[in-house]
Image (cartoon, rainbow, N blue to C red; front, side, top):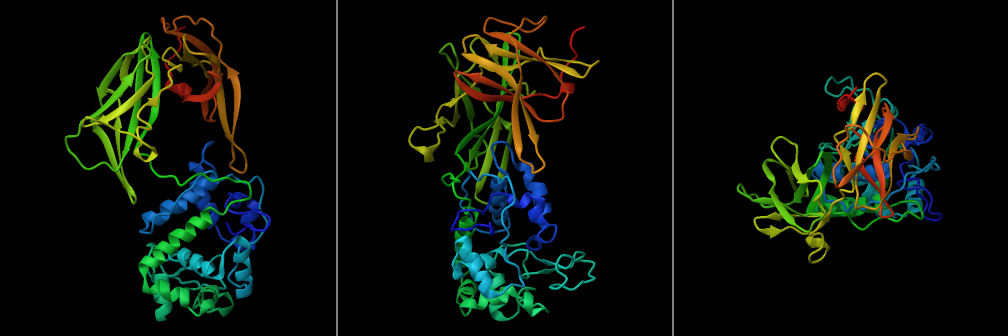
Length: 457
């Protein structure tokens, strides 16, 4: 974020730190950025930028280490080139630090808060900073890291209490090289007023850090529009999949409920409407439910379908139009989005995977069959291929259009026709996209060639 210039709107949290040119600068010395990005980049997708995963990494990291909830907004856009230098360094003067934070849009008091909040974790490592930390030769600290406070893995106000009490071992406050004692200069720049208030009140420290971290995460380049604050939906279906097998449409998926009260004998139902105007219901599988505790709440998930994981078996002609969820006789809604909102979840069964798909073992080619509902307005069905460039940006190309040709031995019925395409092997993630009623959808991720049965000779 520190590359931001509030005057011209350049820089900010835009993942430009992933570029080798920025990581090679003295202001970004060490392998911490590369190590962090090697993890976070893997969570980015075509829908979620690397910059958003960096922001979310802070939000989750702080909370799981005992810190406050930080409001999270999405919509950051990844930079396409390095930003200008501008990250403060410990050997710079207090005036230069004040000016640097002012350029980013933060006051002197906010600078003190941001540094203190950031330094409740971690420390300084000897290898990249030998002028700050001596080699420790400690078998319990093999990387010779001098920590900012005595609870470096936990969010608390010890960075302030130890500083005010004079017991701190912060290498940027009482280090052997006074030139690099930037925390001492920053913390004391207002006569220790801010740090003393943090030391006196853990609650104040926590709330102030939440506010400042949110401001930091929302410091983005000019023109980037962030979303409203994102919170977990009360009801969230996911991993919806269809497979057509002759006249049967297999339907699988999960649903996650947020912050349900504990109950051992809860009755959870899936209800759905079909294309013929009928309604149905099925008990969700409580034996396969999972419950995961997060700092801000609990996620309880249920799975649709039978014990053998084949899912619900629907009549292909009837299919499914939308679904609802009921717990102990009460429909579950997105209550925070207005009365009745989100009761019906639309389901797309216009283009689905056909089990007639198969694999030609002699030339590492698959025949992928897509079943297209005859009553749907489907203009095209195609392959989407994802690739990452050298800067880890994900690109998607549309190629290889399916054709509605008759296929021997393919599963056909009165409701669907089969569109087919032969596809050679690839290690890049590939998906099936379709244009339905003038709107383009990504409908499914292609199975590996080797997960398919052999094609009939």
